[in-house]
Length: 85
Image (tube, rainbow, N blue to C red; front, side, top):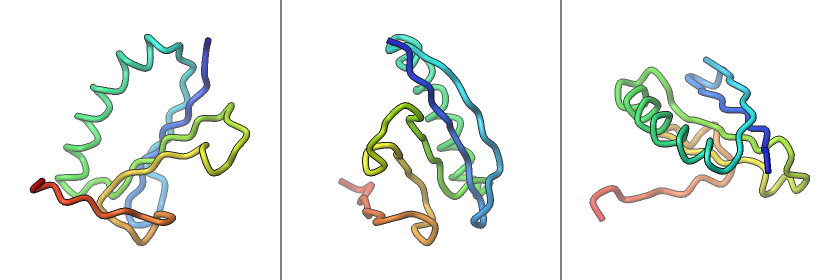
């Protein structure tokens, strides 16, 4: 099954980049580790503040978005994660 995904990077409340891809499950498994490493480094360097992954084919808006980052001001219902654990 193929899924359409939009990946956006934000800084200071503005979209810095947006990539749209169509992936199957295997493609997602191959793409995500590299994206995670690249974007985590950009957040650590303060070039990005959060990443949003939108599953474009998901009809339920509560399930459609996945966001993570270091600036909770731009996120909906952010959860704090203690990285020391």
